[in-house]
Image (cartoon, rainbow, N blue to C red):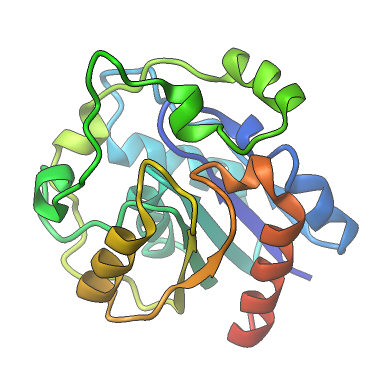
Length: 217
């Protein structure tokens, strides 16, 4: 079977995938869900990528799933390893040399003094999971979003995008436009918010498996 490489987003850790990981393992897959150095201002995209590569080790038959800020990292992993499928999940889709993704894409959601991360990210997550989430959240260093995205072109790997229809931080109508403009593909969609791996793990795993089989990964 495959090795799923699960890359979390900003200000989080590998716990983000804790409801998805056992479901994939029940299906016979190996799973790697490393912690990225999100709080380290010295760590740029190279350090994030190396953290994932170190966790993969010599595993093969890779399916990379990158959530939110992980969208910057997933393609960099694919540029250095043989990957059967890259799935971007409610993810940032970068362009070569880009240093201000937010402005370049016209991100429509303001992050001001009244910003409530629970209402924005966890509004559809079960209360028991929300209660655990605070221990796995922290400040996100700006370094990986401030340096130029280093690839000259998208890696030669089958790529799919999954959008959650009730994402409040990356609204789905805006996400569709970004994906079509930058990757020229039609995204797959499912119900749920930005943290759909916490709110709808079963539906997400079923969709990931369909995409994996369709890609022959």
